[in-house]
Length: 109
Image (tube, rainbow, N blue to C red; front, top):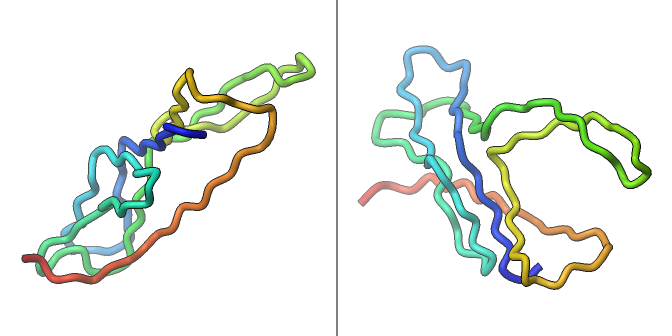
């Protein structure tokens, strides 16, 4: 879908690590359709040790109407959004993409 954008907001960094300063999550991430990398979290020297998870937004249950006119419950988070321009041609087919996560342990400059 040409011109589509995935945006991640409202990060919540979580861990069971005790006494460790958490890494810092980017407040808004707009994924680049061309494949450029986006920074998700960073940790300064002597911080972020252990295992950390970044969850975007909270899950809420909403009621929607399916293609048959029936009410269905869906769990959604509004912090993960797909925006498709109105001018982009859309067919009634399934669309997929692949997100590749790269973990880097790189020294700051």
